[in-house]
Length: 267
Image (cartoon, rainbow, N blue to C red; front, top):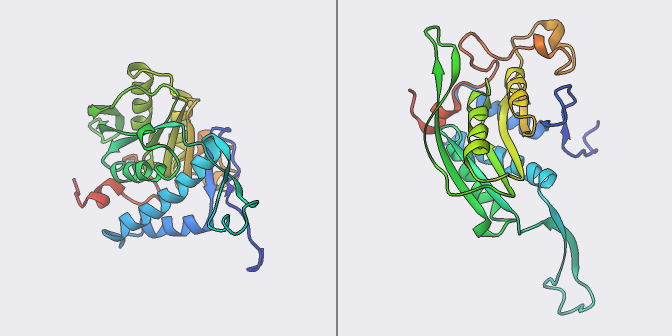
């Protein structure tokens, strides 16, 4: 494609299933690469997170939320009374909950919460909070997730429930959070949506197996420790042979601990 051509944002072709949406955007990929550079710290990291989640939320709302036709006056209607603006927009009368999976998800969730006020009625938007931590064994292998506390402001019946979590590594935290809402919070929700910046094949397999109804949106797929023959194939074709986690279950090539860097708390 030459420089004079334009293209809309596409999704990466893969074999993970229709519930997985990996955005193939050179613009967002480039900014996400800056975020992963070892010299990227505050305040740049939050500025980049803001741009990434703003763009991701635009795609998610366009794809998943209900729309309606809109007809309204503009500043030119006084001069041309027979001419009104006719367009499409996100239906304002929809309920949405964004869940802060502390700590890496705290700032992304707040960004999503603010963003939805552009389209939805304010009283229909809520932010919940869950404090979660990895549980590991003596070899530092992740064994699960411990939900240490939460502030949940009500039911989720007919609501879009968003989980903005930058790093989809093993999927344990996401699986536990979605399971808690399904089992303990009044519903059912209209849709569950995972919003990630980076995901691994392991995360996708675990989450899709545990919750096949969750729609997963991500900006990048990392499977850097897969065999070369697998890397040369379409993502998901040899799903069982793909690997994006090292022996401590950190993402490779990844970007390190986003939660640590965003909070300037390296523990």
